[in-house]
Every structure is written in structure tokens, then in C-alpha cells.
Amino acid sequence: MSNKLIKFEIVTPERVVLKEQVVQITVPTKQGEITVLPNHIPLVASLMPGVIEIIREDGNSEIMSVSGGFIEVLKDKVVILADTAEMAEEIDMTRVEEARERAEKTVKELRHFDRERFAGINAGIAKELARSRAVKRWKKIKKID
Image (cartoon, rainbow, N blue to C red; front, side, top):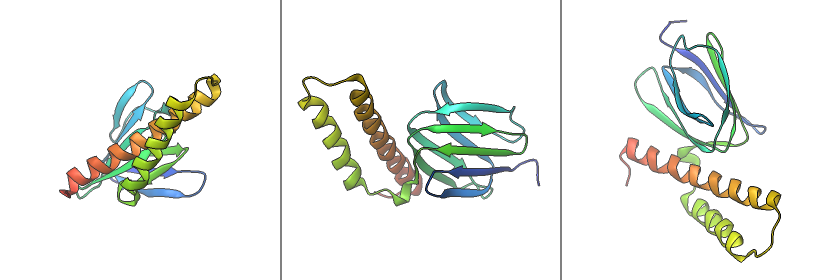
């Protein structure tokens, strides 16, 4: 393997979203956004809902949405275990907006709710916002209106 490439894999409980060699990976962690390049120091970090961007060997970008999970950076490999993850081109923006609106409406309608339910609703909103940002970034990169 060339020192310029990283073995990258992103997996959810349902499927392997992507498995290939890449030049770099940018992910949203709880400590902030990080970019992993070849020969990065080993680390494990929690992921926040947000956008993952990878750069392929040919210089093209790939955009994904992630709702949370973990990243493990090893000597020659990066593995993301995600709660949910989708390629930006797979995301239906109409459904994203509908889900976000339903979640926000639920928050406004609830007068009394417990912290667990509130956290769950907020996590749903964060997931939909991450999906929306992923699609918008993907469209910008691909120059799609």
C-alpha cells in the first residue's frame, strides 16, 4: 500500500456504507472536526451528527451524513462505526425536511416531557440537519442546483 492512501471503512448496524482506500477523511467529533491523513496518530473518538467528507485518490470528494458513532484511527486503517450513515446522493431532501419539521413541531407541542424524550427528539433533529448539510455540500461539490 502506498503511504499516500488510507484503508477506510464506514459501517452501520445495517450495512457497509463504504470500503475503499482514500487520501483523507474529515469527520465531526465531539471535540470538533478533524481531518485524518496518512500516518495519522492512532486515536478513538466519538462522532457527532454531521458530515463526513473523504477525498479519493483521483482527487474527487465523497460526502456522507452520519448521526453519531465512533472513529478508530489505526496505523494503516480508519474505521467508523456509525449509528446511521448515508451517502449524500442517497438522501431524499423532501423526506429530510418533513422529518425535521415533524421533530421540531413535536418539541413545540410538548408542554411536559422528560429529559430522555427531549434528548431523543433533539438527536432526531440533529440527524436530519446533518443529512441536509451533507446533501447541500455534495450538491455544491458536484455543481448541482
